[in-house]
Length: 390
Ligand SMILES: [Mg+2]
Image 1 (cartoon, protein in one colour):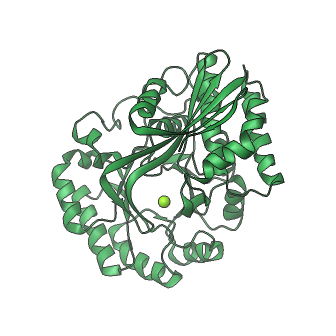
Image 2 (cartoon, protein in one colour):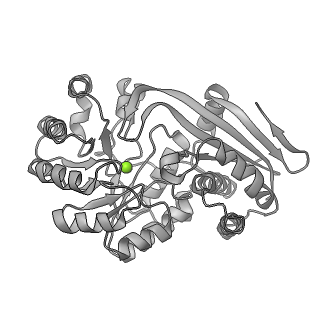
Image 3 (cartoon, helix red, strand yellow):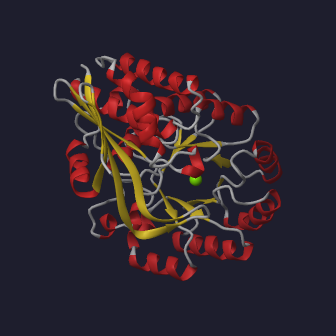
């Protein structure tokens, strides 16, 4: 089947709780939803969550890459089997290399997810079938505690008793050691001794700050630290890992298979945080996870704050089929949104995960998102060319 239309939509929905981290104060979810229309009426929905501080992309660059670099290749391929999807992705990536475009991962991820969704729907099967066998029935759900004042965190605990059922928690920490001690201490006292607590700094510490903070935070029995140093400081990560013995999760440092190879080869990490969007989609993410597995390195499935159901479902498909997965953050920010409060969202630690229907199973939700929460950015058709929406 051939693609005849590509639509891009900007999803820009305010978050109920503004999300604080050391990188950003995020007030709205920002994504680009891609809808691929095929000649036989099949539609595929994909999503890009571009973040400048991760892949260098944003909501203005993704449409440009898709329009100028990807669209003619996408229109020229038949998509009937999974090999076709892989071939298109390879062509798109080599086109970026030929044109010296290095910032394209998140744009590629949108095409990858949309193609897989459409092909799975065409073949009447779930996307997981393209990724591998289902290896688990329960996902290791982890939540993230944003960088909020302690008083606010206490209020949240009070308002959200369901949080106490979580088994894996990530605490965002800042620069000041005493504040971090209080923050992690509070979280430990709320969740108790049995919960797995790790900390996340988003690459803002210097080496000395990392040593100082981790030395003091060890007393709370933290299991890992995520991105303690700047993303390019691979030697620093290696030295820190050696000096503290605390497992290091890399996030901003790893956006591709070559990043993963470099980090693992240099012994600069213990766990890879894979996010479907920053890693160029599900097929690329699968390659990274398989390489990591061959090196005995586990993975975490991360999510950018504010991702829609499309990337959430892609992440879930990945998590269900990835053997070396230790944490699943696909819904990590939801506890702070209305869905949680209104009881629509349940932590499924103790329940079996149900498989979705064809594709990601998110077609009707995606259409609702487009209708209610998105603005049209671009429409590309095989016959009539480009229509740009202002
Ligand atoms: Mg992170």
